[in-house]
Image (tube, rainbow, N blue to C red):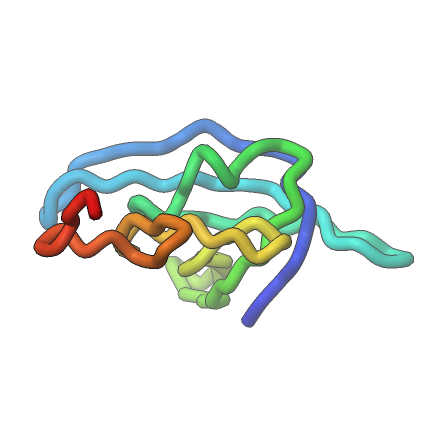
Length: 113
């Protein structure tokens, strides 16, 4: 699913140590546009939380999944983002190679001419 909304609150960064190593989670609150705006709390796990994009007031395009689970007879729902970018189309993908006006930087052939 995808949502475009304005970032209204950045909650404290949560970190911890799990059986698979260290983890971090950033929860954000965004507000949708329209006649009846809604606020949604979205969790961003790992390095997908980019400080350049996550500035209060920025409009974000968020790709996310919704998942519910049962615990002790109660149901809990999580909204987990798997991609966050500025609504203008600027992607801050940590896995992408550096990019210049001429295209991606090729570290094997980065001759100055």
